[in-house]
Amino acid sequence: MKTILIVNGEKYWKNYFAGFDVIQKRLQTSEFIVKNSSLYVMDAEGVCKPDVIFWRLGAVNPEAKHRNILEMIEYSGVPCVNSAATLLMGYERLSMLNMLKKLGLPIIDFNVATNTAQLKNLEMPFPFVVKVGNHHGGYGKSLISNEEQWEELKDLLIIHQDYITIEKFINYQYDIRYLAVNDKIWAMKRRGKYWKANSLTQEYQIIEPEKDWVEKVKFLQGSIKANIVALDFLETENGDKVILEYNDIPGLSGFPEEAKLEISNTVKSKILNL
Image: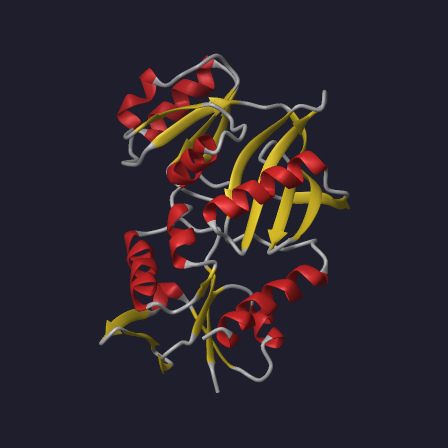
């Protein structure tokens, strides 16, 4: 029986892989070994030798260990969804944004420095958004509307030893996610509780994908060789749109069951092609 290793992720995924030996492990408590070109993964519950890996470690601040593990998966040749090479491209927020820029896709311009000691050199006209490091889920982000807020935040951020970006605040009406799984694409319009996009979502609605944005998503998907990718962007009241990020380990809340089935079939197809 072939073994599917699910790295982190939602518990429900086991239900989509009947007929396979499905093992789910948390990266935070697991160790990876490559011996004689074979990959083994171990934790307190035991050791497995995966035939395919389904990587669902999203919405966390990645560590150097995570990158090392992806490099080991790539070296071992064990198929992964998305591929380890694709995940490495989007591993860090800066590399993800650089990819979008190289592809000519419309991202929000930002200032960036390697250390919070350089905050004084990054400021721009209010309001602007400050983002520290590579955190997800709304963490490490602040909206600055005036000089007093900026001075207070600088005092707090000086203790961090991480890179920092500052970008113009977009007063958006909705944030929109386009989800691509192979050749299928869905679109969702979302509204959060506060100013942070894709955080504390209060309402969402599946919408008809627009041809122009379908082409952008397909272009991105092909460029990074992703089985699965989401493109998140903001829409202002006057209809302007600007990209926030792409996500190669996207959350699926609110999307139809068909999306999960398509993803699970993609994972299973990797085994059939061994």
